[in-house]
Length: 395
Image (cartoon, rainbow, N blue to C red):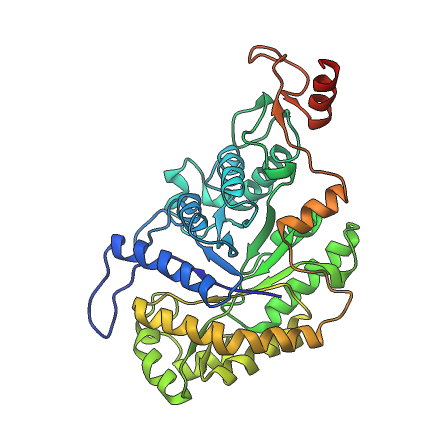
């Protein structure tokens, strides 16, 4: 299983010091957090996308490309990429470029977004959020798999003979997760395409997510992508860890009480009882996280929300030390020991290349010198085999 952290990129006042960090400080901090995640042995770092205060991550690909240049092993992802207010053509181009720069160490999680004022800023209507998500992903899916696309839909201008550049690395599209808090239609979309389904799992009741994930697995098998056990599932989660359990409760309580997402509501004790939030020692986090498998079955990716609610950088880095040093090694061992052998492995670029090409070398698209910009019809690319043939014929 892959373990990692996710950020929603909030800029929140520290309730202990009373200081609100600047945008510059938070951007600098999140880069340090990502680098620390790799240092302590985590597998994934994911950043959200927001276009309104108090969030800073309006350009995930820029941030992730910067992190990719400073890491060697970390998989870079999003939590989420807005499939509704972004043009799918720009998503295709920007994430394919990130895929090249990260040498395949990336994927992305698509979501609709639930901030109503953002939609009109990008010329959209939140009441059309679901059909937008379905139509836009249909186009994105094609743009990454077809060299030349003719397309017409409801929400953007038609495309005629359009080629998205650069083509995906090794001509293999990035792996896509469809993230959802509550919507079975998104689980259906993930299943239809054989993509991954990421259940937010930040808020329970767990029975809701159990139904969503069960539905996704059934539909994944229905569409012929494999058995229900082979469906690709990711989960979110939250934890605050300290060596001693009581220290964790004392340290995290003021941040929980003022958190914009769940503060001013249930008590910390009630919230940890009702949701995946774990506050306590490394062993307590291990024990509760292992119960997720009991509820949802084997799954491929577990992400923890780490840097939210005004937590200062020093505390976040301490969390990562405990997560990477004491929690995740045990979770890896325990989940592997319990894993059904039929369960699919976590998605990686290398596995996707292997699934498409087997032992053959992957396709490397090259511009076709015989096809000018004003020429219609046919592929604008000369494949590797064509290039080898033309080279040998000229000798």
